[in-house]
Length: 258
Image: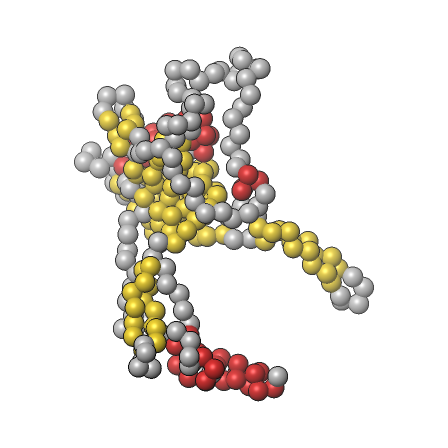
């Protein structure tokens, strides 16, 4: 047991494990995008024409906006869209394809919290109860262009009121995907706030909150794999992750692991 502990300390203290940025390869910088998928096979899809008036028709049940994964606090993979990307109308005159990359992201904050209950006892002792994850929230902030050539602020705000908000997605039987920072995130757009500044009228600062149902990674990474000649080679692999080469210098038991 003592030898295992000493080997572990040696691995931690190995200077070769120190991260560095000089000469590294940056991930591909893709534009942040919101994509709508229309579930054409769902018979309960509500349109603007036959949508009930919930204030007058009190006997009509509300459609549920909370999925089972969000309600139970579990993290799932994004749902596979069963429909197609719809052709929309924002101005009642021109077609608008259901892909929205008309925003520039400056900041992206992920929140992953645990549901906990800490119980304090006598003598500075305590117990903790862990109940799983709270719904993950992603906060995205950036800027809209707002010019005659690029009316991106107007486009996004009208699309939010008509299609992108969580309630509209549920009523219309649509799924919303957010592609950002090498992830595909499935969930609901909960709010949008915009800051107007007279000094820079062509730019509008925004932030929105995305409630996450599930997420998956879409990245390609370089990993080191051992060859039959006992040498190492870098391999470009989709979502590939391995730390074997970083730990091999002080752990001979890993020599035969590929």
